[in-house]
Image (cartoon, rainbow, N blue to C red; front, side, top):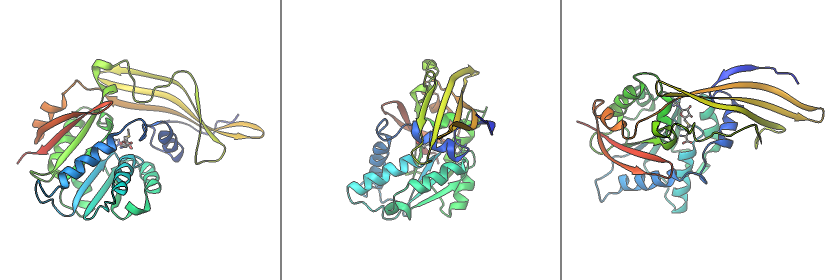
Length: 288
Ligand SMILES: C[S@@+](CC[C@H](N)C(=O)[O-])C[C@H]1O[C@@H](n2cnc3c(N)ncnc32)[C@H](O)[C@@H]1O
């Protein structure tokens, strides 16, 4: 029926799009990175290694709807850890994602988290706003670094990481998703349905999302992931299309281990890498 809005968008820029993102994005059933980050947090906080800085600051960059922070909170709840003297900064450059994250979080954990609008390309400003000096554990999960697709942005981001990490003890965990490796360029992203898919909203009554025409072109190692996403209201009189969004997300593609030499020019030391189910975690510290 009527199309009230036809816009060019990423997947993070309206409450409907954020809801759809949450329905199709990896969750704790499909990816177990939060339990990995939980173990990292416990190790870094272990007084057997070094007395941890207090408060211990976690920055979950590109936090989205707070999936990783929610995962950390679930792990903490399981062993009765109350995140004593730990503060978490959930940072994202999309306000609608932060709004949903704030709704998703457990009340138990709420007081430890600040949701902050900010950019991966200007972490010094984020820290200045936060009132804390340095970050002890920085997480940039599920290949979100691929969003930094313009020339020079990954380098700028790594420089910013080196400025905000606690010298010596701070660690940055940056994930490169397998689907964003140039060697695996037939994969578009974590989400790549064929044909037309229809999914009902769990939170907006009578709303269904219709996605179609999924495609991706690579140019200069940037993949433009595109599809159409309609927001459809299902009424007794029939379906009414409320919005048609032309989704376009530019995702940088990576060579395997390319991040390592790039980081040394940005003031970071490469510490190690670890494998997850669908990704490689690259671990860095700040060089003096
Ligand atoms: C693939 S989602 C990941 C969400 C969440 N971390 C997770 O693992 O489920 C990527 C997120 O990064 C955010 N993002 C993209 N570019 C960013 C930037 N330059 N600065 C901060 N956040 C950014 C997006 O808004 C989005 O919420």
